[in-house]
Amino acid sequence: MYRFERKFRSNLYDIKDLVSLVRSNCALFVESYPPRVVNSIYLDTTSYSFVQDNLAGISSRVKPRIRWYGDQQNKVSDGVLELKYKKNQLGRKDSYFFGPVVISKKDFRDQLSKTLISVCNENPKLRFLRELDPSLMTTYIRRYFESADRKFRITIDTDVRYWAFSAFGLRSTRPYIDHGLIILELKYDQSTTGIEEVIKEFPFRFSRCSKYVTGILST
Image 1 (cartoon, rainbow, N blue to C red):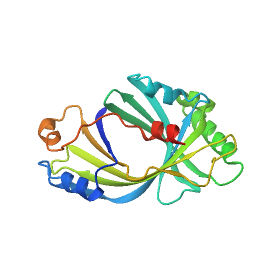
Image 2 (image 1 turned 90 degrees about the horizontal axis):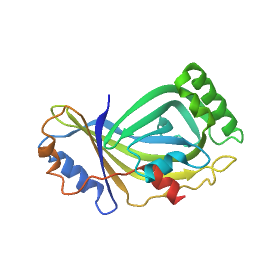
Image 3 (image 1 turned 60 degrees about the vertical axis):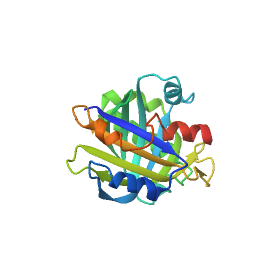
Image 4 (image 1 turned 90 degrees about the vertical axis):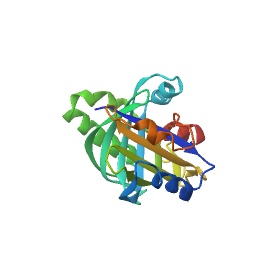
């Protein structure tokens, strides 16, 4: 099911200020889950078709990625293959178990390709993914908030880092760090009411913001 996903990106706010804004909102947001490190490897064509779709403003698009959690940048642990579908401000995702892959090994690309082919063979609608390669890895710290009535969710991402991939693996062991970047995302179902009251208490404008596109353009 598609839901609204509205983002705010800033290098000006302090994390404490944003958390205070969230907690003082009329929806009575409280922290709903412990903070954790989120890791993703994005998949794309050699010509970066998914980046081009985003930059061209195509309303309906897909973004494949492998996601896992925890401070584990050298390996994919309990990875999940996600297909993130977007229609303007609406988003949804399909998830498939992917399993572990060691990123630091020289045969990382071969390992990832074999695992991806196995997942695609089990799910015929995913076969288009077999032609894709890893293009970017991201990590960041995410905090989670939920409104008292559970209609709204907010995530706040900080310490965002990007690693580009070359033909052999990670292009560099040192990430590009987006210093000071904070991304707040407000999520709610299409049938949710009362959104105007919640949004008007945030003194900023929500807009498009893709970590994947930012990372590709920055590395």
